[in-house]
Image (cartoon, rainbow, N blue to C red; front, side, top):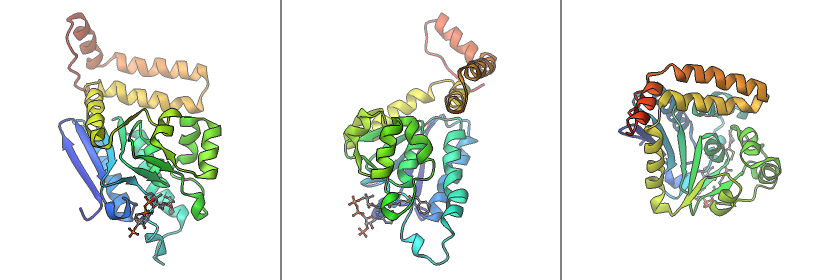
Length: 259
Ligand code: LHQ
């Protein structure tokens, strides 16, 4: 693929594969554009109910392509972030469908940040996370400083961000950065099992659940309780809620339609 991203849609599951294995899927401008466009397209496609994000070859993603930064025409870093990285992070959080990061190998720099921004992370035994920013005199970006303390707590986040030592898959599992570790050749199958499970869920309820979880970081308990009641009012009015109740009564699996 010339833009370094493959998109495979199989039934209700879209798999996005960062595909520049010779450079460990380091992100170029065309890849970032393609990734954002794919996320926006999927967000608007009601037939896609779950997303898997993974990398080709031995890496998940090595972050920004550093060779690209040597180009005298490269835009300043703050512009690069505002215009190319931040929209990807926002798209991952605002899309209704759950996104599973299937971390097949090293996730470094903004590659780690993108994994942090996904809803669920599962990893191959070979996976590792490297907050590589400090080594090149930069600060963690693309949401890393926001997601990491929330995922692993402030003490571990500070160590990862300031020291920058790689965190291997076993450690990542122990500190709650990933929820499952499997052998590499089983990773995509494990991601697919999870994606199918999510794809069988009620799409609107899943989208509202994402919203509710994200909101909790900036509100107090009273606001959370009010917010849950508001979202439940919406979910309670859907055909999927009625279908869920019918399926329970009839002792059969529900068939959700996203309405
Ligand atoms: C790479 C890269 C890479 C190009 C490996 N670029 N080629 C946002 C705003 C704008 C600008 C600045 O950045 C940001 C956010 C960021 O993402 S900053 C952080 C950028 N990423 C890094 O600093 C990570 C750099 N890479 C590494 O530290 C290592 O490659 C890791 C730890 C990822 C993997 O190490 P190894 O497994 O030992 O692999 P390797 O180093 O031998 O890499 C294999 C090849 O991939 C090699 O090419 P070659 O032609 O020699 O085989 C590397 O040059 C290439 N590569 N990362 N980011």
